Image 1: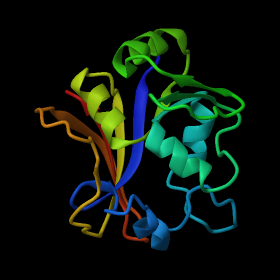
Image 2 (image 1 turned 90 degrees about the vertical axis):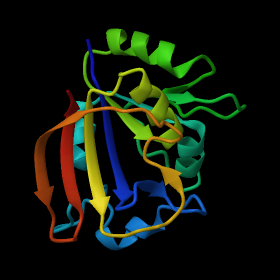
Image 3 (image 1 turned 60 degrees about the vertical axis):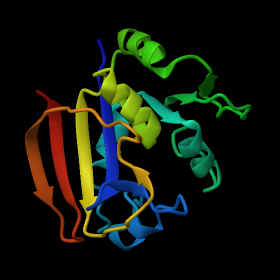
Image 4 (image 1 turned 180 degrees about the vertical axis):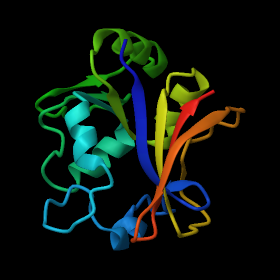
Length: 179
């Protein structure tokens, strides 16, 4: 059975986007997909190597589409949406309940699945206890509003810290698993 990893960056006050649905607040910390000598990748390239499938909600997918080339062409992509969108080459649009589908997906996939975003999907999967690892990168920024890390999820959930790392950029990674 595969596991779902939520690898995500958030502000100190728990937002993954600002009020305008932008992640520009992360720009000063560098682009983890950058392959330039000396660029910090925050474990991004290893994550891509270790996973063969990505899951995301429609808002995350539309944001990614607006950035240019699709960054996960080698991964099977599952986009949860009720909208009519164009799927990426290796992907499919999923119009059914994400919780039920992800329960099946965890049985189908052999390697970890990366939950790319967003907060609403993460909240639904957290509530169903389907997130197996959380790799949270906290940016030393407060936004005051935006997309919450786990959407509208208000429940209680206990995590165990596995590891943490402070980066020279100011980001702090905390790696958790459910208790």
